[in-house]
Length: 404
Image 1 (spheres, rainbow, N blue to C red):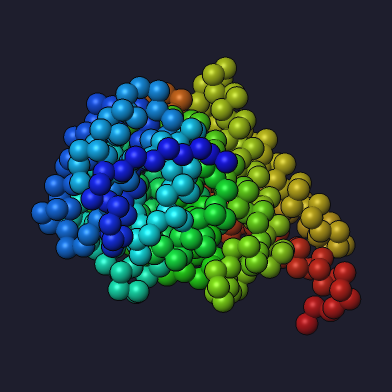
Image 2: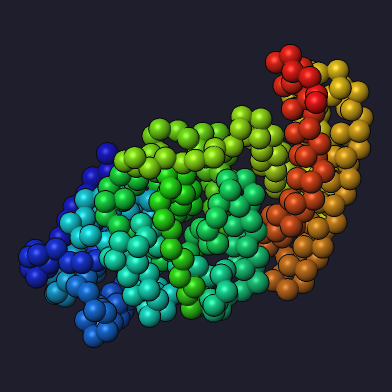
């Protein structure tokens, strides 16, 4: 269990605030004081509900802990906790479920999101209209200032979440979220991820549990000092998606009270979707391995060719009916057509993103993810639909049912 040290200024020890805002930080000694003072001034002068600010120091190695402790002693309505390990998920797991406030929230210390979005974020929760509220940079009405690389990566990631996990939210990873405490008490302990994927997993579990999710378009300006490692984050996010895909949406561990997810995907659809995601992960892994030696274009073509043929073969082996065996060559031809579409989209994405954002490992990975997401509907209509037809035929043969 993560060890926690808590420091709090005197005024925070009275009646619980209506909203507790957690600010996770790691090595932010230079920006922490400015950000917390700005946030506290805004809350005191503009926000209509009482608020407690909790600084959650995620094992910083600079003077962040000392700055946070001083702010907790000097600024009313601010407290500080110290965690022994890194991770945004750890910070929220250590604070949200134990909060005495009816609503909990979190935001990044750089305050990239305009604070005027805070009231629209928490108001539906305080009124009981919604259970979880998220800021979104990708919905109509949002105004975002950031580089092309991050914009492409964000849109590609959310497209993958929608295609694989059935996400009905527009922006999984905006660092601006709030939740009713009763829902957080039940749901947060079920989230396994401790890092950046925590947000996505929380939203997927909330959606599967039938919680009401409210979205607020935000004004958001990218932090030029962001230290997010794009390649490592992409790998962790893809691992998280694969783990959630293997978890049944109707898993009782995801239920909250009497709420249950309805309309879970059938096992056949889950198997086909699992093969599709595994193929995507394999494609990205092959691309990353081959890119330094062959360059982005050849690495992309080779990765698509290898995984497309493997994907078709696996889909064909998923069914043992005579009809599916006869259609095996057809399925492989369809797979090649889908691969050609993927090659076209990813090649175009590489060319566009490379010319706009510059060539680097991060931009190239973002480009192929974007291209893969754009080609996903074509792959679904071709390979996945063909595979589902053969799989249903196989299931009818096994159960002794005739085609009627």
